Length: 303
Image 1 (spheres, rainbow, N blue to C red):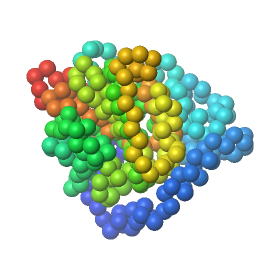
Image 2 (cartoon, rainbow, N blue to C red; image 1 turned 90 degrees about the horizontal axis):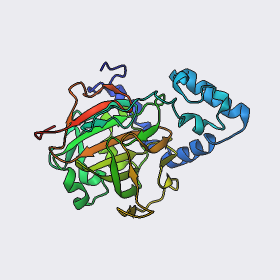
Image 3 (spheres, rainbow, N blue to C red; image 1 turned 135 degrees about the vertical axis):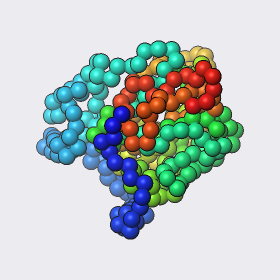
């Protein structure tokens, strides 16, 4: 697919200057302020925020379930808006891996042992991304990965690519750097440094992980089974295990909503080795929509 967003790989002195404030900003303080502001229900205030945001980022409200921006109780409700039925059809076929989000592909390919590509010239550790647990990372070493960037104008609900049974969830506190294309190029180990929520599912094609990466102004990450995971931002890794049977079991059909970003960020999708094959047109910079074919289940191995 064509790339309306530019993901340049070269860096210039001005890039370093533009990125310097990332290290100086009070990340948590700003994020708490955004959390407060996006939940104010004073009509003139929230309507102004929504109107200016929608105009600046050219948000397509025609596809929203509620097209009137004044009808949203606060800015966060607008930002996490639902879409009209059929706006994002789920690709049919038992061997199709559906895209979990609207956005753009930052990187896509295969892990090199325990190493994932962040940007040209930058890589990061799969084990660190998943919270430092070697056993948790092993099933995904040498496997397929895709890093999907959600811009502010995008639909910010996250859907499951394959039907799966939730096995684990881990909240890993960390920094709150931006995850914009510029910052992704400039800051080492970005995705393994930022706050994130790791969800692990068992599917018919083996283990699957969706890593929801936080960022500055991402004031909350939610899942459909646990509600808001952040805030609180915290400093301690938290871990939840889920049974395969009973009332506490969580099983989601393909295309079902699994979570959302209350303000946008990045999702990293992981599969084991020789499990899926990325579609040919899926390359860095390609725009994607939730529900479209992202990969197919591999019949003969490879990705």
